[in-house]
Length: 303
Image (tube, rainbow, N blue to C red; front, side, top):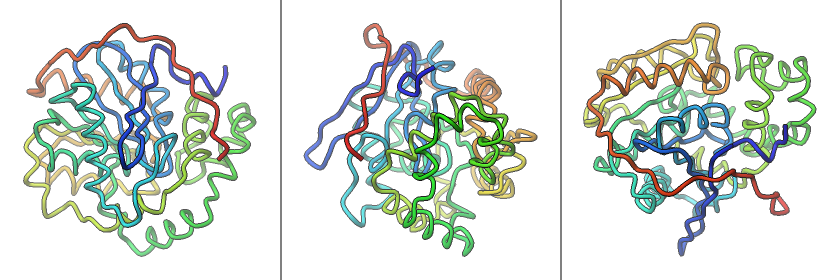
């Protein structure tokens, strides 16, 4: 297994904009599905789930601005700018009325996108979305430290060794996963690849802390599914209950699972998402475009 081969059957693409480029991957065929990663992550955070979902969907996975191989946003950019960049990529791929799944910070971007561009979002699947406990004093202090010192980037230098050792995985993902030993080597490389490449997590963190979504949640008009890890130490499951109440949405809590549920229990997340989409009134527009080829990550650009 190579860390440069985390997606099979996906194609890398780049959207060049005057304000900077957006890099993303696409694969599969069927109804449109967009996957948004968390703070300090990258498209590779979805390395376990994306290939499974591409069996039935046209899957688009971007690197959010300042993450992966996408250029950062101007200083002071808000959450709406992150959402608009995702919208531009989705429009280029003609993925109208897509299901948008977001993890942690990506869940908050997905919510902002659904409110700002409802025509693009047919349904939401939010895995431990930020936005409630994110603004607590503990999390503010934690974000200030991690975005300045970037300890995850130092850990990511040793990602191949961590992926090969259960004891190292347990230590590296302490507090994020319920038990790092439950993460597959592919999931470990997928999470740490993003930590190694991110160039600007501070703008994303500030944008996340600046928006409290709760007063606007009653305006979300599409079907919503909430997924949460019962042992999430980053964003407690109580946030999930509040989101579920305000969005009038089902909440599915995964036992023995932490904040990195998309990597800890990928098959279960895929199963729950599939069951949700079978019953939700989501437009099933086939957004296939050509035959995908094997995708390989490019080499780091001197970062």
